[in-house]
Image 1: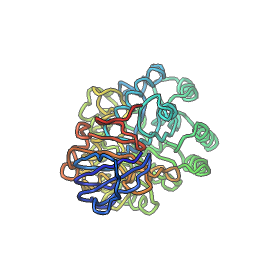
Image 2: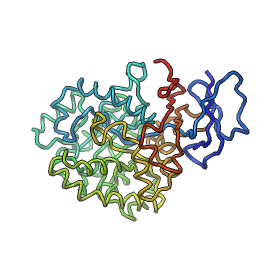
Image 3: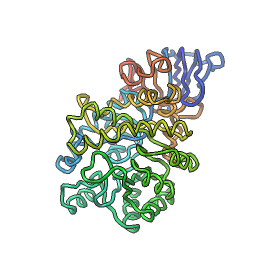
Image 4: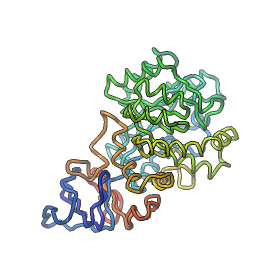
Length: 416
């Protein structure tokens, strides 16, 4: 079915905006996006009119975990079926917030992909890493539990997989490929929400990282590395990791190394700000580490931006329910937070649309742009986000969402 959107402003995702723009799509593919004066005729088609039309947003770092707490030690204590039921609502919340694609870097999303494809649940396109890989005692470990409990949890489909030594790391990566993971996620440094590790410390050895990158690369997958500290960032880049998640202690040398390697920084400013604003929900150890790293994380993004590092917007949202901070449906806040750190509104929108697919390397779909031949993942708004970027943080301003050409939000939403 041919559809047509006419808007006062067209934001293509990459490139300059177009005043008085038109998007025409046929089924799930965009056939035209550009000035109204050059748009093809679409006889018999009633156009949708909007103030702004832009690509559906990408969240390049999210977790579908179905958690109602920031304490990861609850992960093995709640049934996976219960958490998956919560995720079904999270998927819908993401669509309503204008997120049509998610790169999920550890969580239950790998199980939800089939349900989305068959129409059992409504949600964005999910490109999942499967289980996050961590060293014993690392950021992905649950430090207060016996080690064998955590190992069993990982092998039974939980979100965390401990692996040590190059051979075990290669096997763990292959386990995710067996589940059709679209990327591999590793914890290359310590973290904030984990109990005893330090965010600066490198965790995987160079040999372990190289083994994971080699296995992933043979299957045309990239590796995403959770990295706060510079040692982990540099080791990950040397091993061939494609994306650095967080990058808190990135400095000028690391930024140059990222730029020269063609690596991408995935920002995750949302989780820092939302948890800092709601510190009472955190364990004491996590709040202390968060307070010690939040300002430095903002500085790192500014350093990367000034150095010309490619930046992709990711939130690190992982909690369920609109009453929770850092929860699905709040994804659009990442873009105004990036503008506060020095990106222009147009740069922030590019980070949250056109750059998103690049974080998947060879697995990247033709998405994130209003361009002929690209996926018809489209948003309309009742405001201009270039004039006020904060409107993207309010789902109420997003009055139309199309995923693969089917309207999933708005008065004329297609029947499921």
